Image (cartoon, rainbow, N blue to C red):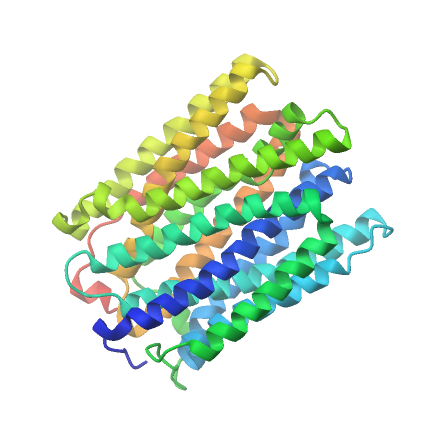
Length: 425
């Protein structure tokens, strides 16, 4: 793979970021649309989780192969493919018939969500890999560029959460997905027309078996990533939104709309704040002054702190014994703190995967790493519906604490990469 000059990479970086923003706005909106729309149709927590399982599973499959596809056909091809598949998924969701049987509806939405999962991880892998190739190599340039991309992406996704709830309460499910498909199609056309040169075009000799890394740090970081995102999605996907819905809605149409808006506002603010902290992380951690060894130590410290938060919230939920005002306020405050600590963890991970890999196999290692990211979301999604249905909020939050603890155990085995490790294939 031919690596472009780094200094002139800013126009390509801006174009990649714009494409990623457009995608993540629709991705965030779609998640809230699907979750809340099907909850009002009577889907149980486990059935709601099923709607997202294929989405996460296809993310795993996509990331495993996307690194090879990008190495073979180029990063712009995978980026455009991600945007195009998302448009197809949105249009397909508009074809859902409310008269279909429950099983048929679940299967149909699962398949369409699977397409969306493919789309998201093609776009994500392309964008994150591009940063490694375009960012300045001196100082903390790599950490800053990846932090800005990831942080801004999550802020935009948070706006998407709010957008989805507003659209659901105003124009309805079908009108919402068709409107988003039309806007995303226009953005794809504009970006394809204006994309500057600067991204590698791929190489014919790339082999699929190369996606599996022999770099110990890449593999350990990927394992830590599985449990880190499992710790978030255990409560984020089903448990907390359904708890808030039970607290906020009186069951009427007006009550549902108000509950949608309030839940969407909380989820949006959480994601936006999470993205802002991610972007701020290099300054917060004074990354310019730290070696990779020191940043590895920070990864261990921050995930240890993260473990304590859901454990404390699980204890509060157990003591409360059910929905209450003090528990709801405690959850809002505690989960915002969780978001702050989680964002720092995530930002450090996003830097370390690029620090540990080498330019010649960046798409392979980033694809493998984000396969683990998707595996964590899949695990968290499954456990979110299951734990909430079996043990309510205490079990959901306790499971999140266990996931964070397992991430801590994995991160403890990391160390700064040696030159030989960084070039392993």
